[in-house]
Length: 219
Picture (cartoon, rainbow, N blue to C red):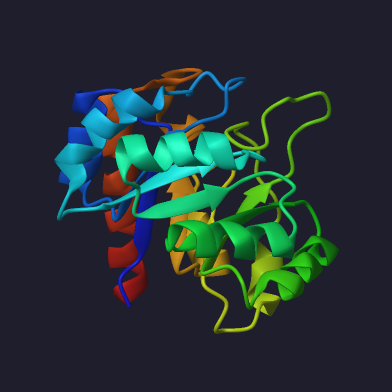
């Protein structure tokens, strides 16, 4: 099964092109005002056109209300909604029904017990994103450049579809793939030259490291 790769927090045509050239299966746009990766829905709508037929465009929100979700869906026609806040199972189900779109629910992880929360969402979320718990004082639920112990993910049921996130970069992706063997990976700060500034070279380096890790594993 092919590894899904999501490059998140994209803001320019050049970095989107680099993600698509590398083989990204998903590209993510951030709609959280406190994030340096925030993008207006209208601009995301223009940028996501390049991905049609190549990669799924994901709208990333944090406890967004229906009015803002309506605006996002209308402006960019996402292929998937990612909920990165404290959304309850009921809220996830309601959003999924309202927009008839697949939903990826994100969880902050630092220890094995954090994975127990997945159970309540298994019937309402299409996929999960397992991200490192933010550092104390951070206002961002993701994109903080920190990792967690990837080995705890081996205890997950084999039918749980998820993306691994949190602190991934070209230097550590090989270890992450070896230890967790995730069905998907998500990277944001690991391909940035500054907070919110994606770097074409770092994106290319990341895809190169993924390919090298996969080749080594297959050998």
